[in-house]
Amino acid sequence: MEQKIKLGISSCLLGEKVRYDGGHKLDHYLKDILGRFVEWTPVCPEVECGLSVPREAMRLIGTPDAPRLVTRRTGTDYTGQMQQWARNRMGELEREDLCGFIFKSRSPSSGMQGVKVYTFSGISRTSGVGIFARAYTEHFPLMPVEDDGRLNDPHLRENFIERIFVFKRWKDLVGKKGRTRDLVDFHSDHKFLILSHSPRHYSALGRLVANAKDYRGKSLQSDYLKILMEGLKLLATVKKNTNVLQHMMGYFKKQLQPDEKKEIGAVIEEYHRGLVPIVVPIVLVRHYVRKYNEAYLKRQYFLNPHPAELMLRNHV
Ligand code: SF4
Image (cartoon, rainbow, N blue to C red; front, side):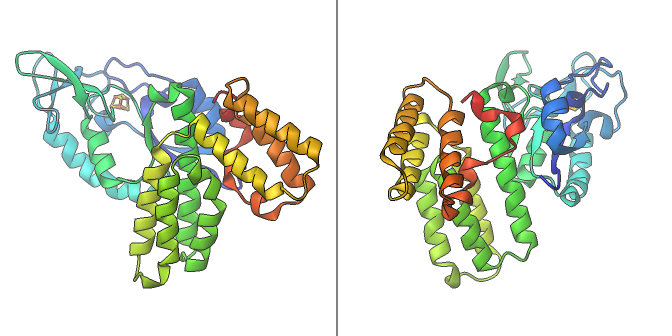
């Protein structure tokens, strides 16, 4: 990557000592491994909205849709202060040109899902969203977001990192004025990647691109991005990946020697049976793409969705 991808992140995940107790929640994978490809924009809503370190711990109280942010011991309500700060901060974050955000899980300010919300009688339900995370996801509804807890799952991690790289390429496309021809190329280069998540979304996007001339202004881009990001959120499965790999093999029908065809077919079958991770058939397909100089497949992001150093496909 010539240019690092820009991501927002809850500050405590980078090791900043901003938590209510003066501690941090350093995540080594995010800081040291993903961090090699990322330029971070750290955000600590509680400190940035004016609270001190250390401070009284807080929790959400009330209804899950519109809870209050209240301190645990003295019951001080910081909802208004946090919301006011968040509204102002969104404008600055827009200018940061971020491609995603990683939230600290379970936090009443930063948690993006499953945060405990207490009733006034003290019973908790884990169905809330932190005050800042809610403001952020409402302001940037199509941007990829995740939390540190969910990113421990290799499938969710691979999915999120794939999405941030797609989002970055999308921003680059739109930045280049986003001519219809560029959109057609973008769609074509992402064909197998999108198919590995959702053939239904790929078809819907294809219809949009085919009818591009009927669109006016920016609505084509916004409709395309909405369907794209919705589709990519659906996890790629072994079945969908196997279909994609077999579909790709079709491009080689004429060039591949019988033993080469047999070799690829056998490796795809091993992947299908759960004997090897997806990186194995992908490396083989990439090898034949190079050997036969298969121009269309060379451009497919399915074969190269994110930096190999992250080794994301060794575990899925
Ligand atoms: S979870 Fe959010 S509010 Fe709490 S310390 Fe981390 S960044 Fe700050």
